[in-house]
Amino acid sequence: MSVFMDLNLSPSGDQTRLRALVETAAHLGFSTVAINHVFQPTAKKRQGRSRPIRVLNRLTIIMSDAAHFRPAAAEYRGFDLLAVQPTTDKLFHAACMTYDVDIVCIPVTEKLPFLFKRAPVNGAVDRGVVFELSYSAAIRDSTLRRYTLANANALVEACRGKNVIVSSAAEKPLELRGPNDITNLALLFGLCEGDAKAAVSSSCRSAVLHAETRRTASGAISTLRSFSDSSSQQEAPPAAAGDDPVAKRVKLDPAPHLALPSPE
Image (tube, rainbow, N blue to C red; front, side, top):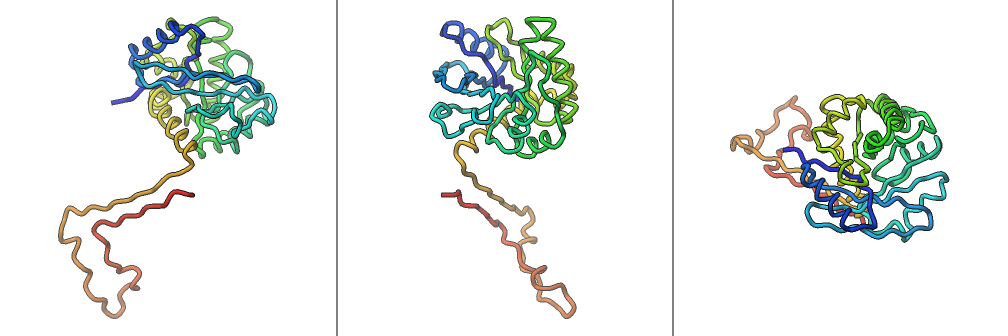
């Protein structure tokens, strides 16, 4: 069963409107939403809270200068997701290749200020960073709809549909759409059927897991081998002349376990 997420809901000073927004998302079938706080270099934002579904706090930094990205700053703490929206080609390259972020936002309300190049896009994909496209602007205005479709198709062509999420950036309940409607919209963005569904489910989950790993800076790898045939656990026969080296005849532990310790 798919788990659907919308990782970009616009906060409101009106708590009643915010609650209605979250409840509408829950009614449409989303299990997780993120309240997006757009960060200006000196601004501090409050965290949103709600009960009906899991609500995450997200920080989006609109970057026009490299100095705007300060991951150790106090303003960045307490947010579950960290996103950047670069405004130049150089900053887009840095966001994809070096910045420790979860989401790179693609502007949809204006003509792209840079071109998508395969090297940084592939670098972001390899690092587990996702690209976000939002759709609510396309609902509000026909001109913004053209920009949204053009920018989305340019991104999808560059990344071949990998690591793309589609969020609402909704400011009110009427701007929200259900997971199936978003999947159909993603097809217009150029995504194939599988990638379109992932854009509102598994790719979003990957972004959330990426954020959890980034914040904890630790992890572990564990492997377990099970044997259904007890005969496979028997010790290998003694080596005869001409047999393979001992390294290739080592007896397998019926349940080997490997764990990498977390860094200090």
